[in-house]
Image 1 (cartoon, rainbow, N blue to C red):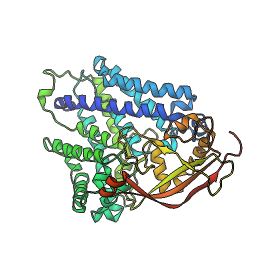
Image 2: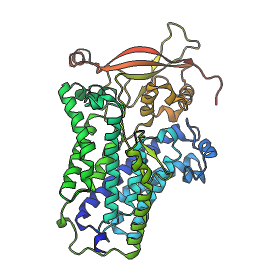
Image 3: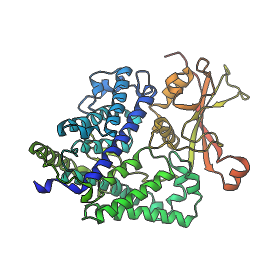
Length: 472
């Protein structure tokens, strides 16, 4: 069928596949390095406890069949190896059916991780990676031109990412409608980057222009993805520029990079990028792609309805395989930044003059003199959840107590998630407390004079001095 293939997207597919493999690599690497303290056998939210109460049909995962920390590590590092293989282009050296199986492996492995990851894996970019990764299975390799239907489905994902984010802003916080949200956002976002304070100190008219440009890109441009070329390519390029601006202004894990990856699949590099003779796709491949397209269009009903609902929800999966999802971010923007600061003391009984030493996290603000670093696309899961904890203790109800307990024990895997631990592992503190502070950027003059990029003010006690009553 001539309509089935699109020769002009050969190069776009190649760039898309290699970039997606790179995101897979970052995701699996983060899972391998952080899982023991978060969801391991002795973690804060252990996987064995989760799979005991949640059946396979609600959260399909290899870990329903077996779980051990060693097995999880094997899954995560296998995912890394598979991502490296795809990044090197091994799928183009295999027959079409084998290349599809190779792309299916990281999807199955990462789905298994996300579906048992609980709070730590409740972010929208997890579902975005899975939905995009599933479509990549059917995008083909050098044996055939990219299928038009799969390219359309990738644009449908990109449309929901951008348009959903735009709608949730217009329906949410009034500052988006007043074009004033960026007066606060660069300062109060979950994990500021090294340039965030400079974005924050831009003149207010520039902030209003930023918001207006964001609304245009997220509300006006997305429908243009489904128009003929070169209009669709121009729309995708505008989205890429916007996402690169967001990459510079903060740390949003791989959300911005995944959006860029999706936009690359829209780019038309021209027929010169395609081979002289395009191999005809095999019949079985056409049948599979058509069947998958029908399935995903059927599953798109609820996400599409959600887009136009007054009760629009963000970052939600309507099926346990995360095949078609809803997306969105920052429907509301905090006006004030608050941070939970965890401290410990070696005193057997806390006194008024006890010396409390702070634990430093890798990404979230703590020491007022330490400037934010760039971590994205790598995802520091504990740091992100600490930001949510500062918004409301309800977000931390399931894991903050276990975190404190492990700090009191000097748990090695938990301490590895931190930047600085003020106590030796074999001599943990006797008591832990947590305090809530209000943080704000210093002015340029204050930064020059004091070297502090933050100023902070004590707000209230978050957790009173706590000790461990008996070892686990």
